[in-house]
Image (cartoon, rainbow, N blue to C red):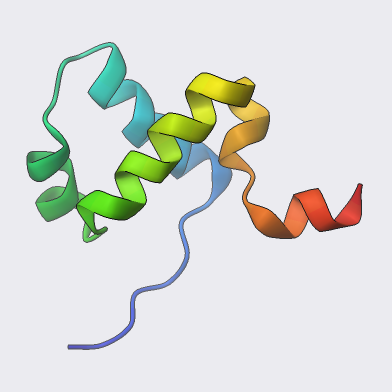
Length: 64
């Protein structure tokens, strides 16, 4: 299986909101977008903690 390309901030936000606002399950989203459930759980947690800034990932935090 090939390594998938990283998701953009807008893609991460779209996926997180599909879970939180539209009620899509993490399992369904993981299959649909090719991202592990653990990764999705991390995105959701970070979004809840820091909002959109939480979806930016580690690299943007290193720049601050």
